[in-house]
Length: 91
Image (tube, one colour):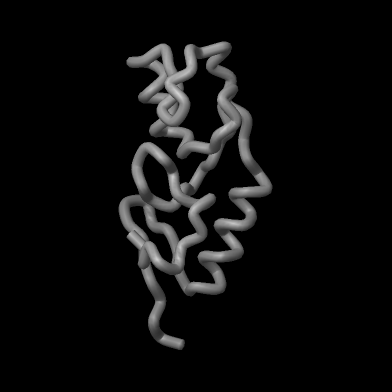
């Protein structure tokens, strides 16, 4: 994971405590990593941060947040591979 002091809090998934790759907004108004919230919603009938009962399980892509994360990673020379974060320190 990236250095936690440098990562904007809104980029962090509340379930994994890692920077999100595919953020989605749920009915509770919070953003989560898509794969993690999908797993959570299959097992639970409440949202992780609010413990509110599910109104619905629709997941809306948070494209604005995803764009901000991509731009931040580009500035930090951080790329994402299939299984890990890669920091380019060649510059």
